[in-house]
Length: 91
Image 1 (tube, helix red, strand yellow):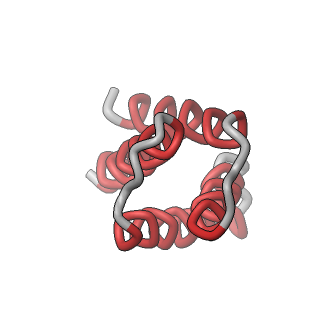
Image 2 (spheres, one colour):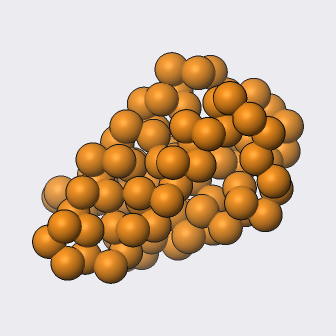
């Protein structure tokens, strides 16, 4: 059950990245919420989980994306990685 909740967090975050990629401006609280959840999920990297570094990297990009224009390839990479992680967690 916990894996599905964490996968849902990945899916929501990937949709936020896709919204930013296609020029739809998501609400700032949604971006902060997704970045905060990804950051706390990324703390599993301290236990040795290598895929949690993707979450940390993604949360940093989301926070930077609020203030600066992030290059599109830096939005596509975490979007696809998080989408893949989220879909695999529901299998």
